[in-house]
Structures are given as structure tokens and as C-alpha cells.
Image 1: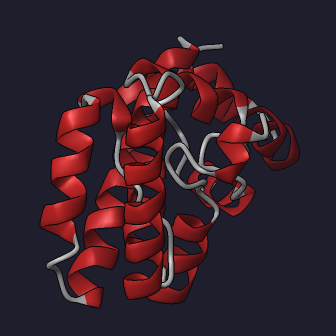
Image 2 (image 1 turned 30 degrees about the vertical axis):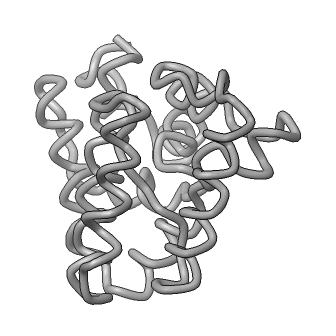
Image 3 (image 1 turned 180 degrees about the vertical axis):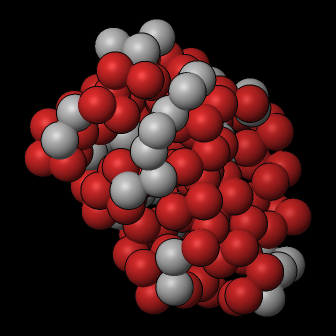
Length: 166
């Protein structure tokens, strides 16, 4: 469906169709629906981005926490959403050596201990090496800066997921 056609759907149908775009957070689609009409792809993506960026910090944290750890337990157990599985595979996170997996596990734990939410990065823009470098850089952030950084990464992920629909 085109963005204009999606904008013609009633709220429930819109959320049923796009509610999974923001990881396990259909409220993002519900609020984006209120920003109709969507004349083009960019307008639809902008609506989702605005909802994410304008949400109160508590909702942003819930959205961030809905994301799985990179190469984490959900990935190892085969419990990722189709989108997350495809995204993590695009950066080779489904083909880690035992040493690489141990490094990701350690960094996931260190990051979650520091910030209280999983490390979120738009893996489609990265390689394994650049993701590991991003962990190091972002672990130096204060909590508010890191929340804002993670929100920006979520918005990028959502934008790419919307683009993949067309």
C-alpha cells in the first residue's frame, strides 16, 4: 500500500498493518496515524519519527527497552522479530565466533548495567567492528545523552523498516 492508501485506513487497521514497525510498540503507529494524511513515504516516516522523538522520556525508555540485545539471548533462542533477525543478520551478528559472542555479551551486560536498557543501534548502517566501536563510544555518555542517542537510532530503524514496506 502507498503511504496515501495507508493514511485512508481506520486507526485499528493502520495499527494492525504498521504496529510492529516500532519494536513491540504499537502505540507509535497509533499516534502516527493521527498525523495523516501521508502524501508520500517521507511524510509517513516523518510522522513515526516525530512520535518517537516527541514522546515523554518514560515512553522513549519503554520503546528502547522493547528492543532485543544485539546477539543476545533472544537471538540465540530464535525469538527475534523477523525484522530484528534480518537486521542483525545484515551486520553478521548471526555468524559470530565464540570470542565475538563473548565480547557482545560482555558489552551488552556492561551497557545494560550502566543505562538500564539495551544497546540500540541501526545495524543496517554498521559492521560488527563499527558496532563494537559504538559500544565503547556510547558507554562514555551520561544517561540522558544516551537515551537521546538510542531514540535517534530507533527512529532510523523505524525509517528503514517503513522504507522496506514499499
